[in-house]
Length: 350
Image (tube, rainbow, N blue to C red; front, side, top):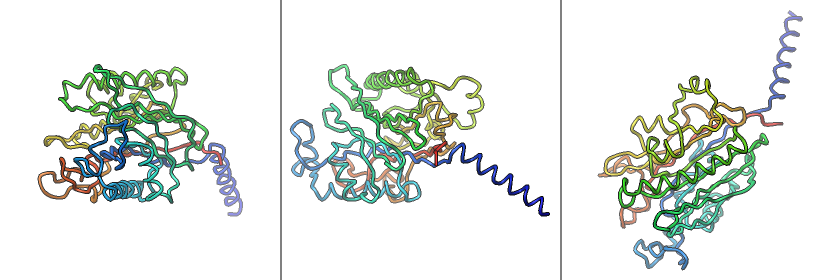
């Protein structure tokens, strides 16, 4: 019996040593949310923000602004089993000031940090990233312009380079592609332009590192099967049970759309004319699906719709509870549901 116990302890210790060589792991919770016109009530003469001023058509007061910040913080806090996300991309934010206010007034204990660049968008709405500095270090930010045929500019393709706790790099791209205002078919070309700009940036990353860890998050105003995403960006349909087939070929340089399964099930983040649209998506490089640095936890992509951000009655029952219904102030959260996904960060050195 004594010798059996010694053998057991030997192999137990050997297993611990083997694990310590490979390093430990950590779960990374990633989210994206279109927060629906997060404007401050200050007049910026360089932006078309007149609608969101105290005397504007939305009567956007400091009280309403503070309520909006509280609502956003409540959703962020509730994510990841009330621990908050490790990374959350946001769109429709007016400037860094509104993000500073959000963190300082309602999320100060989280010690989040902000990555942000001003976009040339005429309304002044930007993309941004909030991240946990205990898990990521900001290396640099970049912005690729999206110039439309009428010589106007859409939101930047906002790139954020992070270093993970295992010492590896993560490239995150936050998107808010041109809207369908004016008709889906009539504006399709604008989104293909945005997709081309993003694809060119992605190709540069892959040229430098064919196994780069890339996350593409955003409101694309198109769905997974639309030309802009499936053909121009070349983000492939992805099911977790298809991984064995995909691994038979080189996954380096490939992009896989984590939202495709829920799209096929008829689910979505925004409801328009009785149809759900899955326009808020998370797309990952092949190295994140099959690699050793950051690995997607299969089928963890979700539409985040806790009860308190859902409309519970009336014509718009089960849809997101928005800040405005047309021009009428409702005091809700957003007209979009957020999307989330989980990943396993591997090889962390102790």
